[in-house]
Amino acid sequence: MVAPPDNDVLWARSLTYSHNGSPALDGVSLGVREGEILAVYGPRGSGKTTLLRCLSGQLVPQEGEVWFNDSPVHTMSAVVRERLRRDRFSWIDPAPALVPELSAWENAALPLLLRGAPHRVAKTAAMEWLDRLDIGDCARKRPYALLQAQRQRIAVARALVTTPAVLFADEPTAPLHRTDRAQVIRTLTTAARTHNITVVLATLDEEVAALADRTVPLVDGRRVSSLGPSEAEGQAACSLSV
Amino acid sequence: MLALRLGRGARPLALLRRLLVVAASAGVGFLLLCTLGWAMKHPVGSLPRLLWCLIPLAATVQLAVAVARTDPGTRPRTGLSAVGLGPARLTTLAATSTAVSCTLGSVVALLCFLRLRSDLTGTLFAGQAADLLARNQPLPLAAVLTLLALVPTFATAATGLVMRRHTRRTARPAESTDPAPAPTGLPWGVALTTAGLAIETYASRGGGGSTPPLPGRFDGSSAGVLAGWSLTAVGLALAGPGITYLCGRLLQTVRPGAIRLLAGRTLMAEAHGIGRPLGVLCAVLSGVFAANSLYGPRDEPPFGPLTGLGAALVIGCTAATLLTAALETRQARVPTTTTLHHLGAHAGLLRTAAAVRATAILAIFAPLTWMVAALAAVPLTT
Image 1 (cartoon, chains in turn brown, cyan):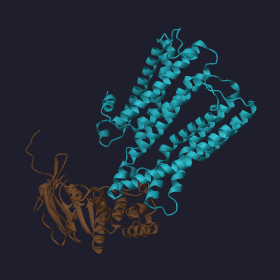
Image 2 (cartoon, rainbow over the protein chains, first blue to last red):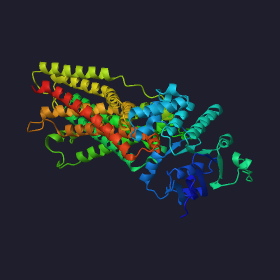
Image 3 (cartoon, each protein chain N blue to C red):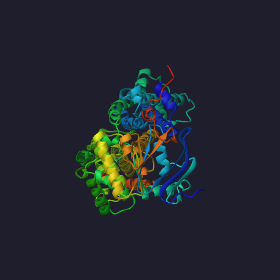
Image 4 (cartoon, rainbow over the protein chains, first blue to last red):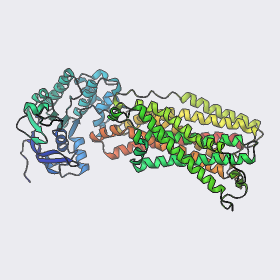
C-alpha cells in the first residue's frame, strides 16, 4: 500500500468498477488537491458518475484504493462511509432531488438538521446561502412552485450549507438552459473558492470544464490525455451498415 | 395475457396481496350464496340479510382497489408510455387483473358451496345452519351467476375509475407536481359522526330498549339505530384524512428537528392516501367494540356462523386496505428516501421518523375509536 501525496485531500489509485458485469471504470488514478476545482470531463457513459460515487464512498471499487486525508475510504465499513459523507462531503445530482414536502429553506437546511443542529442555527445558515444564491425571496415556497433553475440552486445551497471538505457535483447544470447554467456554475465556483471547498465536478460541457483549475478527461472508463473532437461529441466513425 | 405475464413475474408480496383479494372475494361470494340458500327456504324477510352482505362487499371492493393501486405491474413507468403502456392501457391492465382475481374468488366460493351441499351426511354444517345450503332444492342458475358476478363487477368498475385518475397524476416526478390540497372533509365528517350518534340515541330511546338485530333476526323498529350507526361510520371515513393531516401539522409545529419535520410533513402529504382507510378502520373497530359491549356478556351467541365470517371479512379487509395504502405511500416516497440517504440520513433516523408517525396516528385514532364506540353503546345498554 502506497501512502498518498501530502498535498492531496482526495487520492485514488487504479480504480476498477463494473456494474453487474458491465464495465464502468478501468484503472483510473487521480489526486485532488485541497481547495482546487477539478473537472472530470467526458462524454455520456464514460464513467464520470461511477468515478464520483467511488470517490465519495457511495460505491466501493472492486479494485484500487481511495484515500481521504490519510484515511482509506475503500476499507471503511458502510456506516463509517455514511458518516463521512454526512460530515465531510456533499453531493449535487443532475436533477435537483429536493424533498417535495419541505419548503425551499427547509430543503437547504436539511443537512444541518440531520446533523442535529438547532432549528434556529440551521435556518439562519440556510437563509444566508439562499440569499447568496439570489433565491432568498423563494425561501418559503415549496419545490413544485419553483422553476427548475431555482430548484437546482436550492440543491446547490443544500450542498454548500455545511461547508463540506469536498463537494461532488455530478453534471449540476444538466437540466438548465445556458444562462441559468452559467449562473449556477459561477456561484458554485465562487462559493468554493471563497470558502476553500474542494470541488470535483463531472461534466460533458466544454465551457464548464474550462472554468475548473484542472481537467481529467475520461473516455470509456479510462483516463486519457485529452479528448478528441469526435470522442467528445460522440460522432466516432461508424463502419457498420444496417 | 399481458396482465397474466406481469402477474407471473411479480414478487411474492405482490402475489400475496392478490391472493388476499381472491380470499376476500371468495368469502363474500360464499356469504351471498348462503343468503340465496336461506332465501329459498324463507322467501319472506330475506332482503335484510342480502343488505347486510353489502358491508363485506364494500370492504372487499375497497381492498381490491387499494391492491390494484399498489400493484408494481400497473405503476406508470417512464419509457413504457412510448411503447404503448400509457395511462389508458395501464388502467385496462389494472382492471383486468382485478377482474381475474375477483372472478377466481367467486369460482372458489361456488366450489366450496357446492362441496358443502353435496356433503349429504351433513357433518360439516348441521342443524339450523343446514338451511343456509338449501340442500334439497335445485339452485336457480341465474341467481347464482348474478350474485357471484357482483364482486368482480363492482371491483373492476371501481378500479377502472380510480386508476384512471391515479395513473394520470403519478406519471410526473413528485417535485414538479402540485401537491394535493389540504383535506376539507373534517367539518363534514365531524357533523355526520355527531348526527349519526344523535340519531342512534334518539332511535334507541323510542325503540323501548330492544337491541339492534344481527343478520339472524331483523325487525324494523331498530332501523333508526342502524341508520345512525352507518351515518357515524361515513362521518369517520370522511373525517379520516382531515384528522391525519391535523396530526401531521401538530407534529411539525414549534421549531421541529429533522425527525419531527420529516415525520410531520410526510403525514400531511400522506393524509389523502392513508386517512380514508384509517377512518374506515376506525369506524369498523368502534362498531365491533360497540357490538361486543352489547352482545358480549350473553352465554349463547345471538348470531349464526355467517355473522362471524362477515365480521372477519370486514375487519380483515379494512385492516389489509390500510396496510396496502401505507405500502403505496411508501412506494411513492422511494425517490425522497434515496435523496435523504444521499444527504447522509442513516436508516435509523428514517425508521425513527416512521415510528413517530405511527405513534402519532395511534395516539389520535385509538382514543377516538374508543370514544365513538362508547358513545354508540351508551344509549343501547342503559
